[in-house]
Image 1: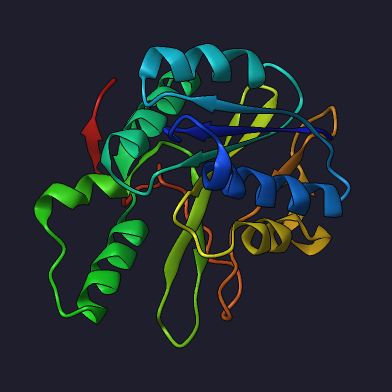
Image 2: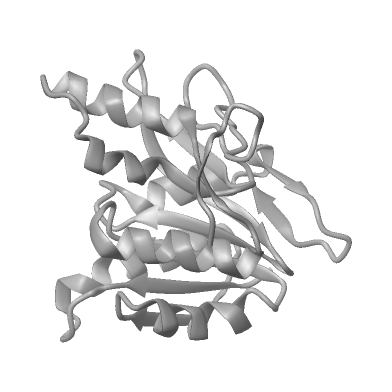
Length: 207
């Protein structure tokens, strides 16, 4: 299996902006997954789709690094949903995580941020955390020949998140040609997998 790393919305000029992608590349190589390409894409749907469409047509892993909120995260969700031919739906589990994160800071989740709980139908949510302080570690989506993993550029340790997901006990083969699917479930209570398209998910947006 090979991997491609796509960074969305990084400023031009390199420097520290390359640190997240480099951390991911190191973690993948440590797990025996060679990175065949690293790309930086503007926060633009057409630009991102032009990169992801051919990437998901090849067997392997595509890691997308995107801002946790704002236009960059919205662009990623819309493009991946369109490529998969599915709707964006509300992940109630992710919504609860976001509400809990704000509650721990003594605030309510603003309604305008509820859109951050929208995921392409069929996406698998990654949950991390201890002592009930769950947080989203990202999410993944089976798409054509590939598995796409979407991680936040703001994550404290992207390499560690990927290393945990790439362990053999967090993987299983889901494609006839042997492409490895990354599974969710990094919390202390075991897998925290949720299908964003299950019966509890309310459809919020048709593409």
